[in-house]
Image (cartoon, helix red, strand yellow):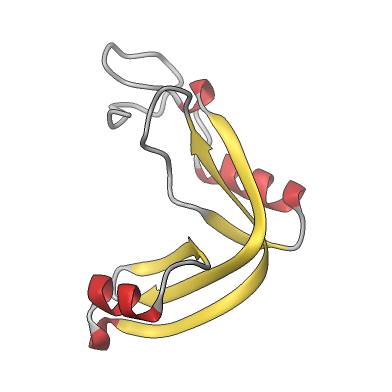
Length: 105
């Protein structure tokens, strides 16, 4: 997926609108890393060593494992997707949050 040039809801040549994408949800255990690059949510299969490699030992404030729902945008035929957003108690909550984060127009 190419980066969006505009979030105004118009299709611009060479870009993909968020409305062209599908929402993928997953109920699972999640690893939530709070670090120097902000908070990121990963499927539980990320290891502490992977996190340290990505953030550096001193770049991690906390690592928490939490059970619940997360969501991300994907598009058929593309490998790229947005980062996971979550973790919420219900699928509806995570979908609503994702839509609010990437609201167009």
